[in-house]
Length: 200
Ligand code: FES
Image (spheres, rainbow, N blue to C red):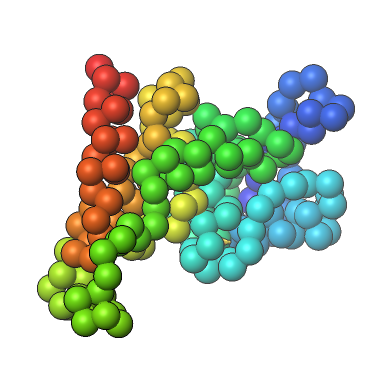
């Protein structure tokens, strides 16, 4: 099938404003949007810039807006998005070039919640901080965040309020607050409580 791929492009070194570039490519319904980006870069226009690494939904580097929805390009199949695909950089972060954004504001929110185990007390047996399967299960879901920023950059509050840490940071605060080995809950809750007025 022929697919029309429209990509919002911007090179701050030479463009005055972002513009839509169009590419017609042949694709299989089972191709991923990342395959189309790779095809365009490798065969049509080598100046196209975007991030990708694992290509399997693990590293979180290729979050983009596809037909208006934040997605990972490596997880989205052509058959699910149709023969006209619009791809834009995720919103609320400065565009460095084309689909590449500056992730620093996103990671600043993540760092604010202290995303590491805080445990100053010695282990009970002097060697290990043991945890039961039930205790581990309490925060299992929130260990799965891949820090792609798709959730945070789909939040309008994040676009306009540079104090808001965003949902990915809150998810990662949960991951440690509910970890039975961690002693830093009050530090993280202070950060989250400071957010309380952000969305009023
Ligand atoms: Fe790693 Fe898509 S390239 S998540």
